[in-house]
Length: 190
Length: 302
Image (cartoon, each protein chain N blue to C red):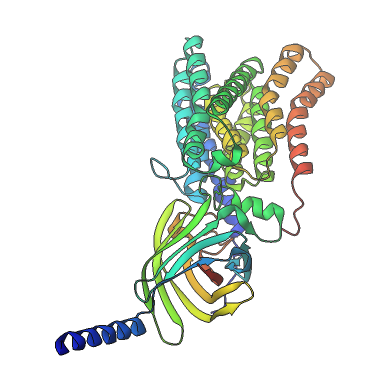
């Protein structure tokens, strides 16, 4: 009897410790209306130019190192404050948005760090090519809001567009090869 | 780190987009003039295929990057199609008899262009949902595009035969020049540059036709221009977001206007008739270009 009671107490304690260390996995859906995907590229070798994508969606699961991230961006949602330039960027000179309508990121490894920092490594599918990139994320906040339980991150990563076979005007220097991406992600818990 | 700017951007584009392709064509024609004289030189029209395809290939290689086989993007087929046109041109230039066989090959090639460039993206990606095309609509569109492509290619071929010597070269040069401008105003800078390289070679060929009007210069190159322009029209229109169909349709009809002008005016002598012929040659090309410029979205500082 005593042995059974002791086993039950130990079992309860151990399950309590376990849930303390590894809170249940939480799934979030990205709020596209309150998320930002901004890119920076050097124009003519002298000035930084910024543009954005207006259609971003995806989900992620927070579960320590087992966390998973999947983000989809519509190529045709590129916005640089010029209809003509957007048309050119969507054309096969750059994104070829008809043939490659989405840019997709799928995580392969998530490393939680100190003070809300996350390092997310995964594959970026862009322009018909798939290459690994690492995103540095910083949790800004989480909690109940007027729109439900939400979480928010700042993020940054870089890649070379030539690695994705998007080489037009790289060698001539018209538009830089290095692309910096700045993320502002807001997501709602499911 | 302070960036250093790109002062040689335009020079690079002019050098590899126009100057080197023009020099290539010049060397090709110099070889013809050095190695063959009289009737023999007249029979070397196949060199136009070498001059035109080589010029376009230089632009592809140095500015646009040469695509793999099979290419990831549909547009990656275009330089290979230009080389395919060169094979047709060499065949036709070296063996001008058997017009029915040449015609059949061109119609078959023209009919195959749209499915080759568009079928993959339409079937495999979300594009078809966006367009809302049923199987029947896809098939009907390919038939329509094949018909228009064949009409353009046959018209171009016929135009170059009727307008012999400098007029044929001029006609081809005007169509290629206007096509480059239309593509540029439809947000297809890469295709515009590719066609621009072709135009540089045709420009040199035109100068050659002024010097040696008896030479049949463009006949072997019509297949290169036909395949290249059609691939650029079909791809340039369908993949663009700010689409304009009229400039392309006007360009497709332009060889027929030049053909009729040649029929009506080739035996008329005098500067007045020459000006009339030039106006008829220019009208569709200028019309297509003006339409493209007027109807392009506002640049907004771009």
